Length: 419
Image (cartoon, rainbow, N blue to C red; front, top):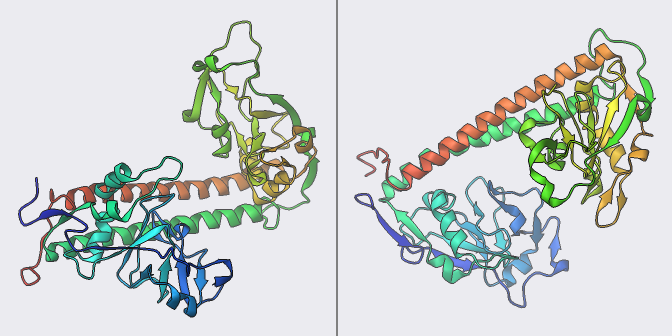
């Protein structure tokens, strides 16, 4: 049901011009790009779920810009990706630090200059589930989904009175500002933790009250390795005993029980069990930088736990030389990650030899200093988790508010003069 005073129409019907990028003979070639040209030439990597990103941007010269017939982006235009990662929107608003932009052939420009919709309101609608569902059903191609100009013109949008559009856009902009500020706070917290880890885990910064030389110990002298599940077939998985998955190890420095999967084991089987303090390592990855990711079990579980076959475990002889809570951070630290990644072997898939890994020297402070460093980093993790939770709440609340405002289920108060 359409709210009173509203209508619903497609892009074409409300006067939104859909302009695609230039595909002609003048389309920029490799030698047309430079690091400091006159015009930003946008590609799909510059248009994300969060809007326009300019960390890795290309430029073309003023001459090449003038040669192109299509794909010019003007202030107030909206950009939509139409190939590959389909359905990402960016807005060329006043905050964008460039004056001249063009798009490549995998995007279109949405121009509202002759439309019944304001660009601010349209951008809000474009990032809603209302448009997302239409794009999902309209895009075609499985290997590389795509949208055509013809299809885009048929996307349907709600059309409130202009005064109401303005108010809705203002309300949602306020939420966007809060979300952006929280994302910035999260990035700052993550960078602060990264800096702390780099300093504390290498001894470049010592905590008050701790002195003495750290000891370099060959990792293999601290414990012994064991393998994951063996002799299992596809039919054995899905029920039975819990085991730590590859992603359960890869994703976090500490093993989380909610990431376990299950495997059937017979009473006669002898499989290695994971216990508190064990350090688990992945054995392969698509890139050398991600080989040998480590995760530590920091809980005493009241049941048997096993390990997937694409990882191996390391069991400490004791916790006097290496505290498990410290190991969680040590093997995720920048220095250890760099050293482990150099051990990766392969071409298309990279593998890690546990024999090589356990030959690495690890630089360790005393047990009490390890515990103190761990406490500092745990507090940093708690701060990051709190900010992530706050960000998630803001995003969910905005999502619910958008659903109400953009369907007219909840109406905004419009000033009489503005109306």
